[in-house]
Image (cartoon, rainbow, N blue to C red; front, side, top):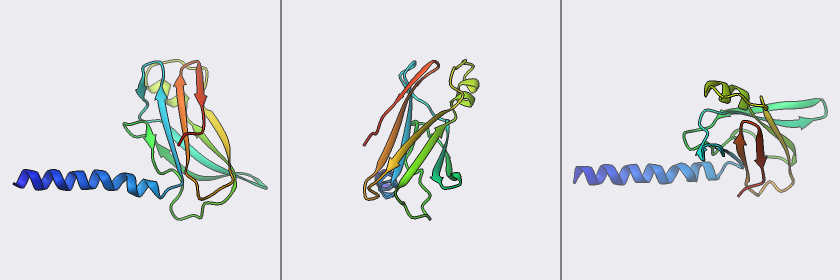
Length: 135
């Protein structure tokens, strides 16, 4: 009985985590296409373009799943504009004793509808990458 209650509580917490992240308008995901595995430990920076240049908004690190499910700062309004996420891939590859051609991968994108969720996956290998707007 005690084990059942513990499992039910754990499942409830697991189910609540995506609900908390669902309120955040921006997520990222890094997959290593060389190994076919997620890329945990990649630092990701979020910036917004302003009249005077790029303003830093947040920094996060991908989890074991290769994801950051809530990258946008929760205490700031999500407004239309040009944003950029930069994946610090050089540091990640160095930690895995792998050379790479790309020390960082900046991905600019435009937010026009703030009611939508923006998901940016990065498919990564040492000498190539691809990205797209996910869901």
